[in-house]
Amino acid sequence: MTETQSHGYAEDKQRLVTRLHRIEGQVRGIERMVEEDRYCIDVLTQIAAVNTALESLAFIILDDHVNHCVAGALASGDPVEAEAKSKELLEAVHRFARVR
Image (spheres, helix red, strand yellow):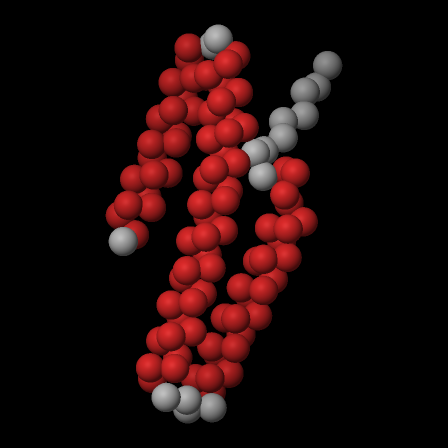
C-alpha cells in the first residue's frame, strides 16, 4: 500500500500560490521600473517590498512545517524521524538567520 505524504502548507496551497503570483507581479514591476529608468531609491523600495513579501511567505510555510511535519514526527514516537525533522528545522532556521 502506498502512503501519500502531505506537506504542512497543503491546506493553504491556493492562498500561497496566489501570494506567489502577486510577488511575481511585483518583480515584473521592478523590471519595468529599471527599463523605464526610474529613480534608484524607488526601485530599491520595491525590491525591499518583494523581500519582505517573500520572507512573510517563507515564515508561513515554516510555521506550517513546524505544526505539521515536525509535530507529526515528534508525535509518531519514532526517534529517528523526530531527530531528522528537528535537524531539518534547525537548518532552515539557520538559513533564515544567515540571510539577514
